[in-house]
Each structure stands twice: as C-alpha cells, then as structure tokens.
Image 1 (cartoon, rainbow, N blue to C red):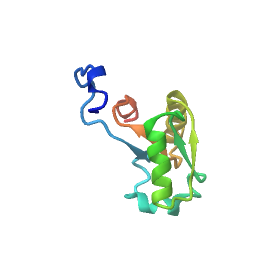
Image 2 (tube, rainbow, N blue to C red; image 1 turned 90 degrees about the vertical axis):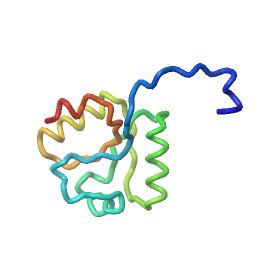
Image 3 (cartoon, one colour; image 1 turned 180 degrees about the vertical axis):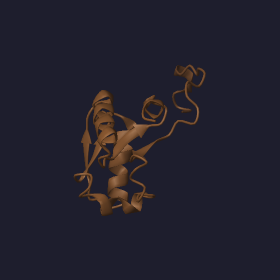
Image 4 (cartoon, one colour; image 1 turned 45 degrees about the horizontal axis):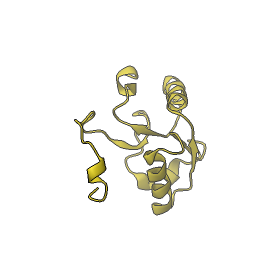
Length: 111
C-alpha cells in the first residue's frame, strides 16, 4: 500500500463483515470443517462451483484445495450461474458446494 498510496483515494467502506468462503447448504449438516470435504466428494460430484476465474475468491479456493489436499475440482462460472445452480440444488435438497461472498442477497432469498 505504501508504494501506491500517493495514487490511491480512500473512500468509505461499502460492506462490513463480508465473508468469503466455501459454502454448503444448512441441510448438509454433517459438514463442519474444510478437513471433512473429501468425505463428501462423491455427494457433490467431485467439484466446487466457483465464481469468475479472475476473482480473488477463486485464487483463495485454489490455494485451499492445495493446502488441505482436497480431491475436488474448482469449476469457475459467473455469479448468476452459481446462484442458479445453488438455488436449484437448494430447492431439490441436493448436495452442493459453492464459493460465495456472504454479502450477496442469497441468504435473504433462500429461507
């Protein structure tokens, strides 16, 4: 930041307490940690449905896959594609794992 601070204009915070991460629906209550994800790889089709390839959450997820030795593929898509796939899985109570930013309106719409 120091290197570029003369070229940056700081503005107000848009979102506080934003969380980024790997998310499963609440009906998948047998999962409580990242270390358990390989145990459900068959249930979720061996994949994590991810956000855009250039998003920071994508690179963080790729790092987590390596760090935790996850036997899952990260399939990148778009925000609308994730929401459509998650909404369908949620409606049908099917297992799914997605990357998600908690500030999305999803949590208001899925209850």
